[in-house]
Length: 103
Image (cartoon, rainbow, N blue to C red; front, side, top):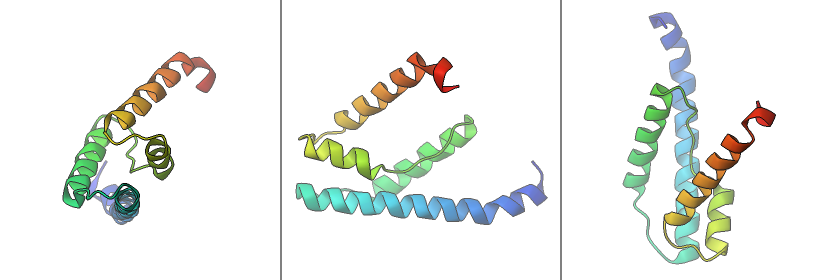
């Protein structure tokens, strides 16, 4: 990684981060409207930014809020973060169990 590479990928990375952040904030707005609650947008932005930086440092792929998973959680009656954590743990277990087939 040199300065030339950094200069090439910087505009693309900023664009991708902006799109992911906008998607997360739109998901937050939608879930707020459905559940009659008020989420903290600043907390969402900081949390997503920190998590994506840690993923990048560890060689992972960054992400943003998943509208589909959020809607499934809300429609199933979930109102706490435990539902998202449970979905993440289940996904991790599935990937670990079927790693050979996925790879």
